[in-house]
Image (cartoon, rainbow, N blue to C red; front, side, top):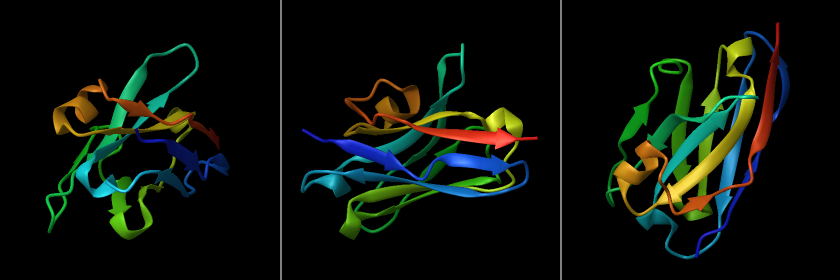
Length: 125
């Protein structure tokens, strides 16, 4: 069982930055592939970014809409995954969810075993 708790959301002006954090419970965090998704009002939940851990290196994958602006990273010692968001746009406004699964494809597809409760990000123009 893995519990995920997001933090770091808030209100920011367009062009600004925020860093989201997702703290995971459990002693096998490094075994999990982690991801971020977002859901805007009235819309479906969409993939944002994913990160794996192979024991010595990470692989990251991003949605085209955030590539070059967002960076996903993880600190296995702290059981935490981060999403650094730069050059934010009003279109980035959404609830951001952390996700975890042992299978990388599940993270990218959004068919994960574990979800966080979400954190609101609002970008004003």
